[in-house]
Image 1 (cartoon, one colour):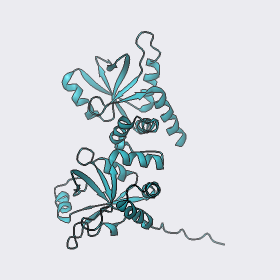
Image 2: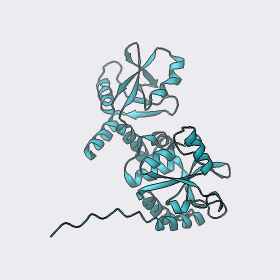
Image 3: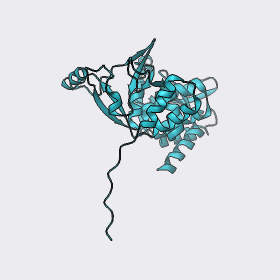
Image 4: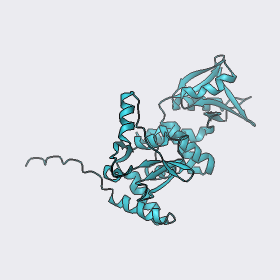
Length: 281
């Protein structure tokens, strides 16, 4: 007997997600529907994004990367429109202007959405002006719900994860940030005169680290002697663990992305996050 021919992957059915969007659009306080929505929405393989064709063509001609999305206004809030299928994006700009649509595979699509932090307040799913209000949330909430469903976040979501952790101080939110930091390929560590640069927070002494090299710019203006060294999360952990043993000035952890979006990294929690990462590998 011969092996059966492999079956082509079937596109995900977003029907239930669309039904839940309609339910929550009418009643955002429907808690069971909200819980089911996040489970279904975050398990989709892709999200879809729409731009005006003229804007998309101009961006291509200019050699720009990324899709020039038209943000939706909801009162004083600006929202990133996200769709659960290409069909549900049709009509977003009216019946006479078919949109240019791009598919975003998860979890990269989540990082793309969070990249609008600072330009928009949140996202909305399957919204059509004049037809459906859709359903959405702020970016930090999106990260928290996704993490609750999937147990991980892409590195591009770090700032939104920090926003959520700083706002709630919830243990799972703090764990979420440490998990994202542990997933980074490389961190930037500030140095001065060949030594690590430290930040004093009350009685605590923290190593100054950055998720991206350009984050050093703000501090560099105040202290031109600052330079950047590279370290993996594992190497940073070793520095923190060794520094904690210093008899005069023990190191309590790391100050992440100070002062742009600061967050205190705890040595023990970073160790647990790295262990969890390695265990899942």
